[in-house]
Each structure stands twice: as structure tokens, then as C-alpha cells.
Length: 68
Image (cartoon, rainbow, N blue to C red; front, side, top):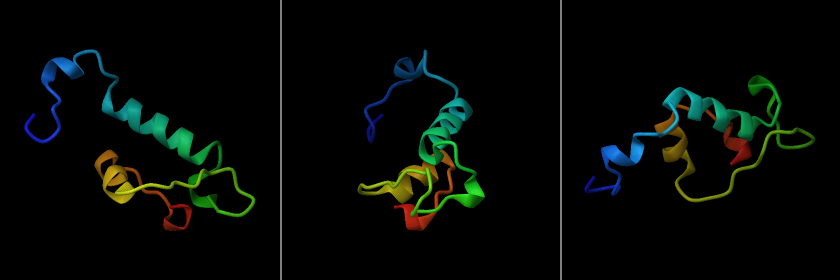
């Protein structure tokens, strides 16, 4: 709680972690195969932001560096 401000009651009705992980992967890869993700002509999304590696690591998601 001290670091995030999130309490157990905030997560009571939250989606299961695996479901969230799968949905985020679906959004990022946008229908493209994980092994085929490319920056030019591909459907996978390019991520822009600060600390994305940490966020993806927390979710257990591997995402190609060339798409960040």
C-alpha cells in the first residue's frame, strides 16, 4: 500500500492476472504472431513511454525491443 496506494479492497472485483496479461498481449500484438512482430508493415503496436520494460516485466510479457 505504501508504494502504490492500492489496497486489497481495490482489487476485490479485479480481473484475474492471467486474463489481464492475455488481454494486454492481444492489444499489443494486434492479431500478429508473437514470433512475427515487426515494426515495418506489421500490425503489432509500437509502444512509447517511460519505464515500459519494468511494466511489461511486472506483467510477465516479453515484447520486442524494436517495437518500444
